[in-house]
Image (tube, rainbow, N blue to C red; front, side):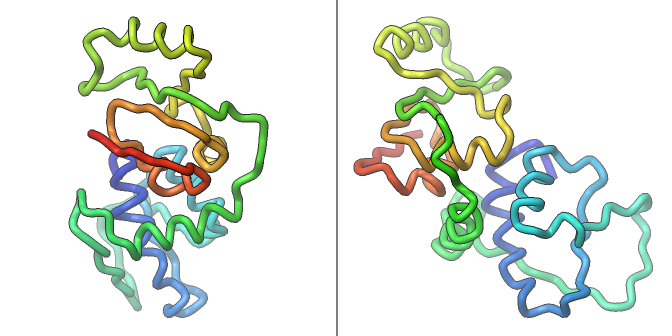
Length: 173
């Protein structure tokens, strides 16, 4: 698993939707260095105790259940979106979060050349500036779920998934 929230949310997590068809004792193999947002999402799903991060790349397993990919990377499979909304929206709270915000990135190869000016513009117009990498997964769920307006350089996945309360949405990348 990379540090990419996109691949975790759209490529990995929806594969867990079929766990209900596997024996209740089925464990989930995860890498040892699982990012915090990934572990937080598994905890939110109630699956953290079922995860196994082996010390070795060589395993002897009696029964192995494989859950295939649910779609091509970059194509938002409706099943994946439904699974993620159904899995995480019930955990959203109406915590005190900004309603209108610009999603900035602290460390990105895909940054904005005039990032400082863009951030200044949004702050002058009363918008909040948020850095997703500074928020827990639960806080991100709450943030996007309660948003009225979101602006971001890249298509932000949680806007698609958890911005269900937005009345109008324009996604641009």
